[in-house]
Length: 277
Length: 277
Image (cartoon, rainbow over all chains, first blue to last red; front, side):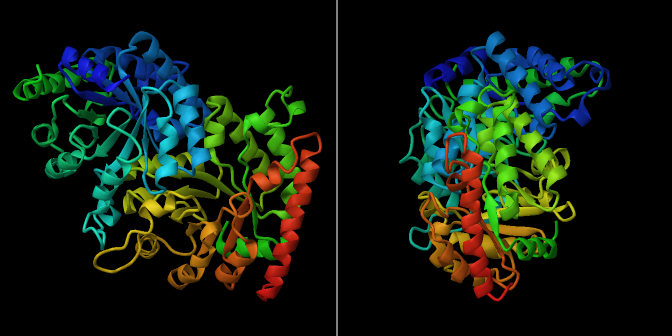
């Protein structure tokens, strides 16, 4: 999916919501545990209930890997289901990968070839050759960690460069623009650092930003939109727990739908205020 | 496995060799392609041929993930085989993971609970809460990326802090010592930066270092030992391609054994020179 198509979906659905499919086997409603693949059963119902309000889904790989190969099978089934039934929804592997060049190529093969994700989150620590192999696939995306939503973000991401005075996350934003464009790169910027979005927009005015941390982690959607929206929206705001665990009973899909719809309606207002609808 | 046990194995085998099980399906000898699980068949023969000379094995996850769930099954079989037949060999998941705290806990579950690895490589960009969940398991280890062997290492790892003057990889080494000890943390330091090992030893005198990049990537074993060895050896030197692809014919296991033995013999000399045997 290219940038224009993604923006088209945002306008059509009046939403820039990404639903995090962080499906924890220990939190799945009891009645699904008798199915042959509880994680896939859960995801399928969540997807069907929320797809109307959602432009992207983002499974975090840790949840699937924690179940071993069985979890990866559940993930593969989820991706196939999404790609066949909802081909216009943007699909992000939240994997935070990154390795030396020839190894990163294999990760790219895993996510873009073997599975049909549209994007993978990548950690920047190992630099250019760890990131570029993900950008050799047409209309596939790297989403590079820039400023994350967690407390540990303060350990290294704010270190200031002796020469330039730039903070590390700013250097990551600037340097990585030599590697790709706003047609194959996005950045992770946590909603808990929404006040930083204005400065970040000066460095990357046209790139899409993937913004986790709204809801459970405490970030505000209004703040994110105010500081981060650009002429093509430029935002994918993720919510996981607030949607997929809106209820842990038989009505979980229905409640997830209601939670997604509520965010979509807020987003519709923000898109209108931004002059994008 | 704890530090003393690892050092015991090093003395017993007169080796600090780690064999990288970076098994690429496209490079497996043709005669194995008819077996039901070529990757596992390949690994099993490589392991049996090299275990005598090896204190650690390190599958890089990318190679297995590039085959989807089938690859993860091959990996699970490899780990089970190693743990049952060679329980005293240290087993490293080269995964370069790292995510917000509750998600890193799931990665820890994946590698330490679901599978029985002794250590996982972790990327430092997201800071403390992304690393610590891996250190809650007794005698399990985090191997944190400090200074990597690739060209991209120069993009961010050498950025100097305005306040302290420290390079980023030095800050990673120092800061992370607040999170763990030399009993649950090691560091990745590329052999291509062997001249840096002396400075690194001043910051982390007692920690084990995992050193990739000897051989195919051009690093020298002698340089690594000269600058990096400590009183408990403190080094695991990885070789992948030079061993597992020493031949791509029916004699591949035999040639892998010869290649591993050659390195072990070099290491025995270096251990003696270091007064450790």
